[in-house]
Image (tube, rainbow, N blue to C red; front, side):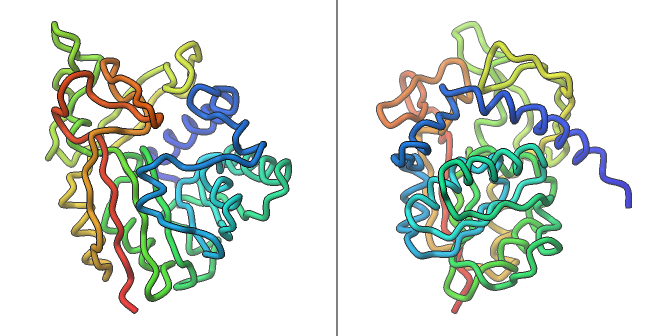
Length: 275
């Protein structure tokens, strides 16, 4: 069956980003991983909880930086991403750091075909800018539920969909982001951008991407319909990257509004599979 256009374009875009991100220490600093001090940010660490000895599936793992940080903490990590260059880089980093982590190439929706281990993971972990690249939250939630063992849970730390309505490209006269995409549109947002968020000087050639702003109701309902129980949900005034030009860096490495918490910038949740 032919690969969908949205996936083909997105994969080409992310394939091209891998070498850029491997050399962008301001966003992807590899040194803490190499010297054994790598940690997740506070939002992701809190929602994930202690990981020592746990079997963790990291979906959309990119080149494995967060998954390998968890492996440093004693987790047994399997990372999955649709980009072959990203997985090659993750495997190389694991070997360089002497970490026993497994990395597989697969689209999220087809993970079961490359990982025949249903109901075997203590945690499924998804974080930061992942869901916007997927068209179907109900199907995504079924994948999460498929791999969780009874009593295990999804740990999700993600950008809040509300600020995706805005963008710095349409900023207002006072420097705040302007209207960009309707929250309830549920239609693909097709962008054509040459820039990369991790390296302002980089220029991409695979510039056309398909993205989806998913209302929180679609994400939460998808998880509930997949048989998972929502155990924890928090909204946060910070996000892991500089989503808008006006955001300022915090002491913990995230970014927040410069004056008032106008909108939540991220959220985190746990959704468990009943024992």
